[in-house]
Amino acid sequence: MEDQLHSRYKGKYSGKISEDGKTYSGTFTTLVDKKSYNFNLVKK
Image 1 (cartoon, rainbow, N blue to C red):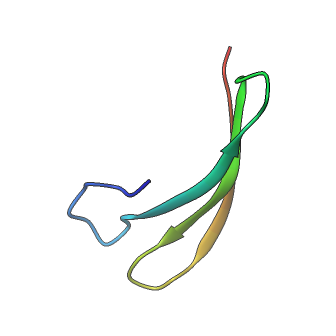
Image 2: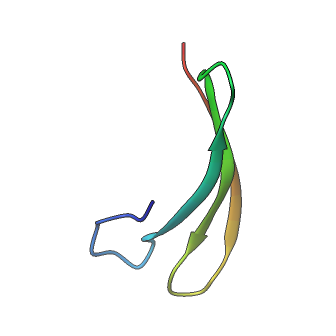
């Protein structure tokens, strides 16, 4: 999945959805400077 913003901080998300569908975890990498950040999204 990639950001559609036209910004210096746009990037690409790479991750997995848990079997129960409640979490999405992975890495976000900026396209300009290739910095990577971990993320973990949880459905409430």
